[in-house]
Amino acid sequence: MDKLNSTLTAVKNLRSNVRQCFEHLADGTDGEGGEESRNKFVHDFQERFGAINSQLREVEQLINGLQVPPTPYSLGNTAYLAQETSQDRQALYPQLVNSYKWIDKVHDHSFLAFNNLNQNTLRRSYNYCSQKRQRLPFSSFNNDPDHIDKLLSEINTPPHTSYRIFRPFGTNAVAIVTISNVMKAAIVFKGVLIEWVTVKGFDEPLEHDDLWAESRYEVFRKVQEHAHSAMLHFFSPTLPDLAVKSYVTWLNSHIKLFLEPCKRCGKFVVHGLPPTWRDLRTLEPFHEDCRNC
Ligand SMILES: [Zn+2]
Image (tube, rainbow, N blue to C red; front, top):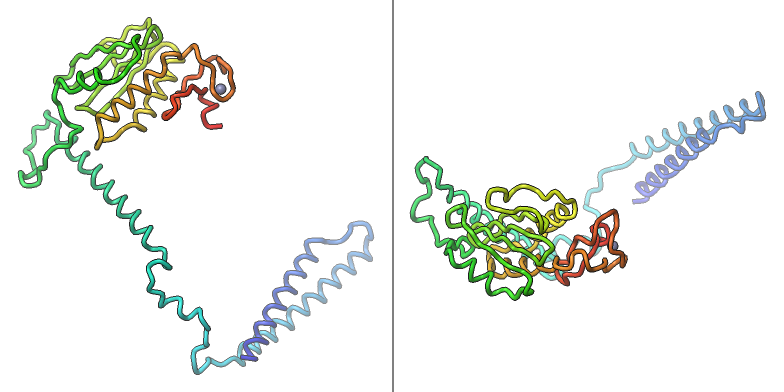
């Protein structure tokens, strides 16, 4: 043990001397003394270099003198670390629960994706999904034509909001929501899930043949951008009715798009735009830049 200690000390000294030598080199000469100071600098360096060389030899000798210990070193209490069996102390349980939740989510989503892809009626190839593996479809694929009408009529909306529902894609509905004299939004449904939203100004046409065209006003293009992120936020395949209701309620909060100042900065117009973002929970208006401050 003594030998090991003295070897470690020698290694430490060697490291510190090498470091000092490099520091000395990095500092260089003061640049004013001319020939004399340069000579002194070189001489100093040679001395330090010589010391390092002799220390290196010393370390080599010490290492050669070391022997493999006959018995393992006693590590004290740290040796018991590997034998810890108590679950509380290992902190494994929360991680396990988290992984389980993730696997559950992945399973749900892959099942939904599988169902969705299988609904492609244009596919000519044989149906490779055996009857045994088919399960009852999720409620989010409930294509009952009256369901959306009923759902939208149940939402408490301000009196100036109106809905018009039509079905250009067979059973899937498209709802045109007109919010006062401010804006229109086309909500494209797939079953009860919201697939797409187009937002336009009140004076712009929004019919089944131009559902995908963007508004010519920047403000409504910005609102549409936010409407898409809100669509993802409210998306819930397990509670689709609630998701639609929450989303439409959120959309209706744009009724005062040009009348309310930003909750953060108190201004009506920033960079030429009114507060286009509505908080997902409180429905308060914010400018795009102010919402994250
Ligand atoms: Zn603001």
